[in-house]
Length: 176
Figure 1 (cartoon, helix red, strand yellow):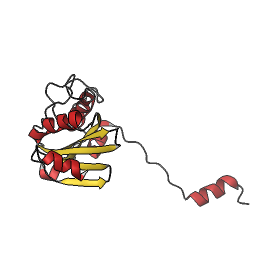
Figure 2 (figure 1 turned 60 degrees about the vertical axis):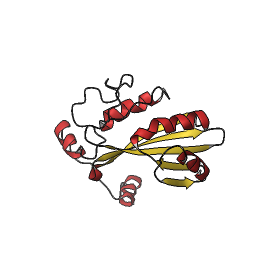
Figure 3 (figure 1 turned 90 degrees about the vertical axis):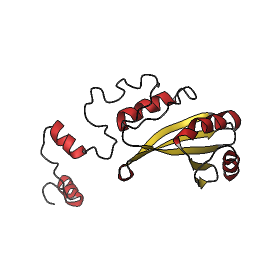
Figure 4 (figure 1 turned 30 degrees about the horizontal axis):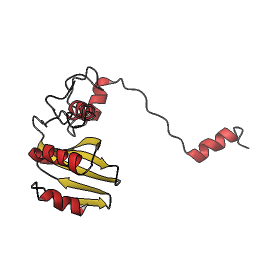
């Protein structure tokens, strides 16, 4: 993977390389480098499959990390491209024209994190959370306890029993 990284560095100003294992590495890059690097990997390096597009909320740093994982099935290698975007009014260029399956991932990231992908098909339609009217639930500042308490009726807690004693009473109800 190091050879591919060095090759790409000749064309693009890349950030760090993190090799997870001999067939998986991650490259950090800037937002504006994503499209040309994706096209290069697809058209010249045989990374023909977008495995996943996902996000991480770095609340303390006020940014999201987007990771695009690509696969080269011919030589069984995967490469992840990761980049940071500002958390406030998070927007990223759509890549659905490169990989149509990206549109589904982009819809999910818009709904769950609030990251916008203008021009992506159906990105503004409800996807999973029909009628959702709160902040996106995968953001780390979403208060799940508060949401649960405000949305769902309280119910009595579950009774917990010692497994050994419980089974003894079930097997020997007369105390034998």
